Image (cartoon, rainbow, N blue to C red; front, side, top):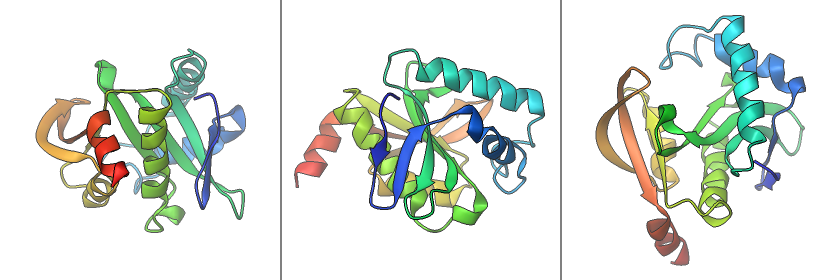
Length: 175
């Protein structure tokens, strides 16, 4: 991602090395990881930071960004537009610190990133996946306009698969 995105309450900005401790926290917090697998060891976080740096600098317009509250300047978690589990599908995703759950930040940040993906990167389709039992994440994907298409197999497990095309996004936002 090459530019900041601002919403009413958030700024989505490039992730820097200063964000390492929050990303590490998100990788080990058992509540955050409830549907994502066991807490990750430090080497996984280190690899994630390298992956973020590489993707954010590849010129594709895709990548990871840190969400920050505008009022406090606090980093709340990360958002992403990236290839889904190595496939050709482009996935929207988010991972927030638990202090920021239930405040609408995931929806607000994901909605802004969805718009960026369709209007700036000119993606044809954006997908989202979540654990079938992760009802709050399903709600976020539905609120931003993605439509559930059933179960698919990604990340070594069955996931609820959601999808939205650019055409459908434009049609909905016109009204």
